[in-house]
Length: 165
Image (cartoon, rainbow, N blue to C red; front, side):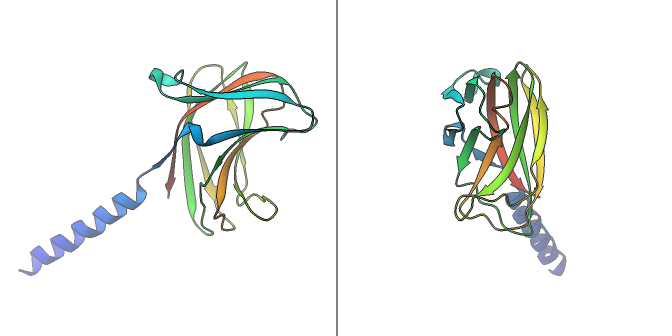
């Protein structure tokens, strides 16, 4: 009888870990465009992602005074201090550009809660992944895609997933 109990307990623990490690989807319609410092841009959700998946596309027609003059922000993506998260998504930028990805607080001074990551995004759909080691709790938090104001371009993002590592 004891081997069965151990087997059931082991299966329960493995199942709980598997469920905990599953990725949560961040819908692209949760991203909103923030434009400041003289920049000009517009964004829309469309079905032009990989394999016809929904995507959010921001078109920057005039750059701003700062690299953060144009950002896409997804609200209510919470991050807990001391934990590590992986964000996976697909992206393309025409022409190819760099994008800064960072988790932030939504309250107080909107501070970053981990060191951001800069990715070079090509002009074709590509899989992207960033890992963040969270230093401060962000609840409410957000995921910010920044540096969209470096050059006029069309930035597209799709299939966001966040998982705790």
